[in-house]
Image 1: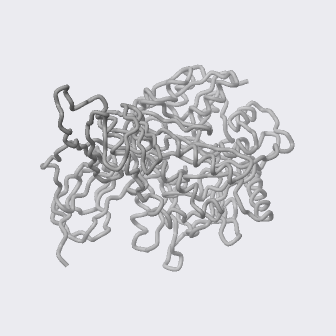
Image 2 (image 1 turned 60 degrees about the vertical axis):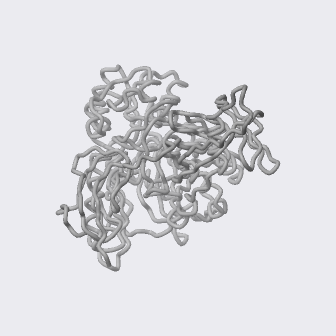
Image 3 (image 1 turned 45 degrees about the horizontal axis):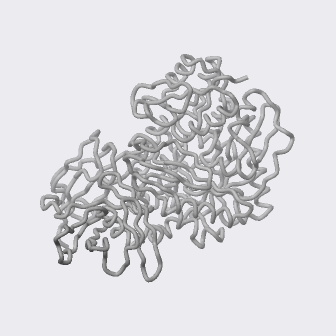
Length: 614
């Protein structure tokens, strides 16, 4: 019987596993990098062990250090979570060789399925050995790991070499394995998967389907169970194929078999030999704790002959610290506050935690479960809309609009959803009264009147940045209090402002963190009254869109070189993803400030391209 369990992971999944362990009376051990010394998963565990360093390759990908930490902390079992070493057969063997219980499938099953190339061969498929014009478009894909890392869509043959190089580098950084392969790219299919759970006595459960079609950069954003609108015969085929894949490798534990469904046909993608990020929707529908089931199976218990009955519908949305309108650029900074009312929230962050550059930008997963799909969607969209998220820019507004989009609510979405709708889903719709509410709250108690004055106060002005634009608002101090044109100020305090607009009273809650002001869900930045005249950049300046590390500069790129519009010049790695910075115009590189290995902050000047006249 397991008494002390180490989670070889971090963040949200470590916290989620610890929650089950606490309920079961199992002591918990966390491992953490130097960057994660004060992270939530390290704080909530009974014991924490430091892995010196910050980069994943130095810490969470060092299986030898993780096993050493488990032995030092007195753990008798290891759970890998997802990502990092979770699909590494060598790590599973090292855990077992150390006399520890492995919460996962046998190393041989991981070896057979963890490499997507071997998995396809096992299922009678094979990657493309050569790529010609007739094969396009194709997908370059990492053989190990997941989460959209090490993946590139190639639509022109001349792009294949760069795609292979970029995918290898990203996969090696994220998974410690740079192997990639090429396969046909199925346009606008639905991403459907089947959750399997198997014991060591021959029982395999197929726990329904999940739809994970809403994706950006091949990484899932919204998932749900069961997958809506599948014909009964296709759903049965998917479950049958999933069980067949599990039995083919004598699988034990929780795993997921993934497919692309297009034109009514199922195309096998891969088997993930681990717990998935989206496992909570299956837990909600089947009334299970999949982590508890993993532990029971690892302790040798038998599953019942048949799985429990599915009830209702569940939808999960991943809340990321990223800017969808700016190329999904990851964001860093202090997460001052995070609350999402009325739904399950799995997170690896607490109020006041810092979001750094080293790891995935996912802040949390919000999950709603209801009797029907429509009710679950409404519940989740409403909870996210009411959520308090104070800190870096997130994809919260995108999630709310996605959940309410007619294509999603009708169940007609596919993996091309964001390619078609991103512009409309990220169109700023700022509250025009938010800057005024912020200014009135700031002006509260600063009366401009003395007892002797009998003249009207001059209008006061304040400037704010909101949704990428500057807004100036004006207000006045009167004997009755604060006033502004076009509205009636019902109440103005430091934390609550009530305005009457066209006969309707509107309440605005105000929260401040330095120059950041939150009016409800709207984020504002107070600006100085007079702009800094020196804060000017030369035309064609290329700035770092996020904090990270410059990992690559285009071959032969030097000052004076001619560059083409759209040409990749500089690659910055942040949160395990590489981001290409391209020339916006055809011209001459007049300045190059970036160097390989350089640490950059958002807005760092990397290069300047001087456009040539046509």
